[in-house]
Length: 216
Image 1: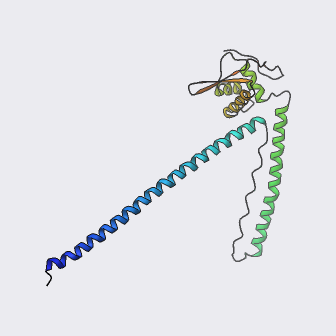
Image 2: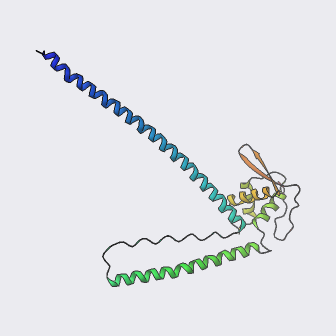
Image 3: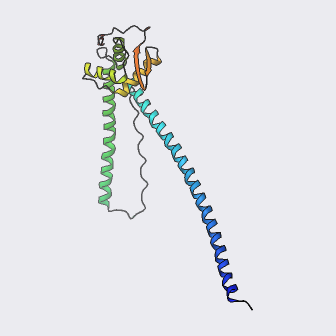
């Protein structure tokens, strides 16, 4: 005949074994969860880095495009939303919606034509012999300086001498890099700052509308 202690010990042993199984399963699931989080975090960081690089390249390309005076391409039209499966609206509402859509379509070509006209006018103004290009202004300014100048310093000087023009540091920096690529300017780095000087082998341009030579 089994004693009371033997009868009580069996359920306790079964409970302990079941708890151990659950603990091992939970520990394994927790470990897999942590590894999956680490994997996804790594992929997100990699994608974020790729997105940042693409955005930087996009900004540089836009600046180069602006410096070259090339008009930006028109954005692609957004796809039309799929028609919803619903009960047809009354004819009056449908006619009003059709009229609004027709007016919107008529306005879009007019706005696009106006933008193209403005861009053509800006391009002609930039090509006018009495209005030097930004490249000529930057090159002439560097040629008149005895010491290296940063992109910010060149931007400030050109903005003061030509208040009628909008001069941005990013565009000036892109123009300076273009002059360096053509061996018309030299780039030096002092710490984390970049400075530019006119190349000694390039004679300063003497076209009309250029900046007079200056010295500090």
